[in-house]
Image (cartoon, rainbow, N blue to C red):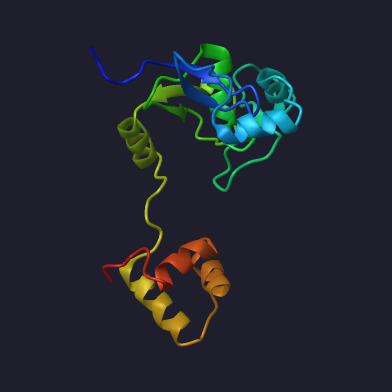
Length: 185
C-alpha cells in the first residue's frame, strides 16, 4: 500500500484555480489564503460565468476566441491570481487537466481560448512546439551581449535604450548586465 494520499482534481470555490485535493480533505479551497479570504470576502461568481464574461468568439467556429480580460506578462489570458484562461477553457470543455501535462496552443496565439485550438502535451511536447515555431530562440549573439555589457557598464546607454535598440525587453538587458543570463560570457 502506498504511503502517498490519493488526490482528486478540484476547483477552488473561492478563486477558481485548479488544484489536487486529498480524498480525506474537504477539497473546497486551493490553500489557506483562499480559506481565509472565503471567510472575509464573498465568493466570486462561478468559474464558468467569469470565464464566459471575458471570451469574445470570432465570426466562425474555427477562429480564435479572444480573451478580453487581464493577461500575464507573456500574453496569456489570466483569470484570477493563478488560473490561465486557456487552461480554464480546457477544464470547462474537457474536464480536469492530468498532472504534469501542459495545455498547448495549436494556433500559437496566447490569449486564444477556443477549445479546438488547444491540446494536452508534455513538457517535451511544449519544447518541440516552441522550437518548431521558433519561439524562445535567442535573439542576441555573444558579440551583442558583450557589447551591451560594455556600453551599459561604461555609462553610455541605459537598460531601456539598449532594450529598444536590440529589440528585447528591458528585463532581458537587466539579466545580461547583472550576469543572470549569458553568465558564461
